[in-house]
Length: 280
Ligand SMILES: *[C@@H]1O[C@H](CO)[C@@H](O)[C@H](O)[C@H]1NC(C)=O
Ligand SMILES: *[C@@H]1O[C@H](CO)[C@@H](O)[C@H](O)[C@H]1NC(C)=O
Ligand SMILES: *[C@@H]1O[C@H](CO)[C@@H](O)[C@H](O)[C@H]1NC(C)=O
Ligand SMILES: *[C@@H]1O[C@H](CO)[C@@H](O)[C@H](O)[C@H]1NC(C)=O
Image 1 (spheres, protein in one colour):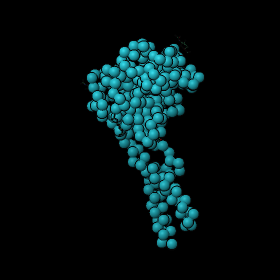
Image 2 (image 1 turned 135 degrees about the horizontal axis):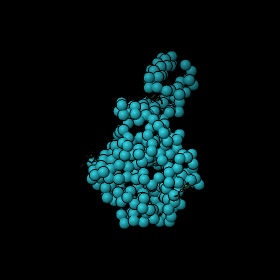
Image 3 (image 1 turned 135 degrees about the vertical axis):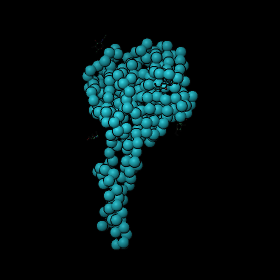
C-alpha cells in the first residue's frame, strides 16, 4: 500500500467514525432532549407526503380560513403558499400529571423521516413540571437544534416569530412580541378562539415552565393524537408488535451500508495499517 493510499484510508476512517455512534443508537428510540415552544401557523414539515412513509396522508393541513385541505402539495403560508397549520393540533390536559400534544421534533443524528408522525412519551426532568408526563406526536420538524435532540411543543403564542399567524389572523401583536410570544395568561385572551385553549394550557398545566428538559421514548401512537393529525406512520403496526422502530439513521457521507460491513472494514483497515507499518 502506498503512502497516499494510506493517507486516503485514514481520511476515510475519520469520516466514518461518527457512523459507529449512530449505529449504536439506532434502535434505542429513547433519550434526553431539550424543549421549547412554537406556533408559527406555517404548514408543518410533516404535512409533505415525501417527508416520511405514511399509511395515508401526512399531517392534516388547513386553508387560511381553517378548513382542511386535501392537497398536500400546496406551498406554505409562510412564503406565498395557501397551506397553514390546522388549529386543532394544540395540547390538552387529561389530568394534573398527563397531557397530549404535538411537537416539532429534532432527534440528533437521525433524519426527518424517522420522526415525522412518530409518537413519544415525555417525562419532564426539571422546572415546575418535573415528573409530569406527555404523549406527543411529531407533526413538524425543528432544525434550530444542533448537536442535541429538541422537541418544540406546538403552543399558540409560543416563542417564535408568528409572521404567517399575522397573515392568517392579524394583527401580529396578538401573538405577543416578535420572538418572545405571549408572556402572560391574560394575553391568551387576544388569540383566536380556536387557539386560546392551547395558550391557556401553557400557563395552567404546563405552569409556564421555561424550556424544561425531558427524557423521551418512542411509543405507539394513540388514536387521541392520530384522529387529530390524520397521520399514521407506515411502520406503526410493526412498531407496536415489536416495540422497536424500523427507523434508519442519517446516511454517512461515504458508502458503507451496514454495521457488519463497517466492522469488517475496520478489521481490514487495521490489517492494512499494520501491513504499512511493518513494511516501513
Ligand atoms: C375556506 O377556504 C377553502 C380553500 O380556499 C375554500 O374552498 C372554502 O370554501 C372556504 N370555506 C369557508 C367557510 O370560507
Ligand atoms: C392521568 O391520565 C393518565 C393517562 O390516561 C393515566 O395513566 C394516569 O394514571 C392518570 N393520573 C391520575 C393521577 O389520574
Ligand atoms: C436542560 O439541559 C441542558 C443541557 O444539559 C442544560 O444546559 C439546561 O440548563 C437544562 N435546562 C433546564 C431548564 O434545566
Ligand atoms: C423495515 O424497513 C425496510 C425499509 O423500508 C423494509 O424493507 C422492511 O421490510 C421493514 N421491516 C419490517 C419488519 O417491516
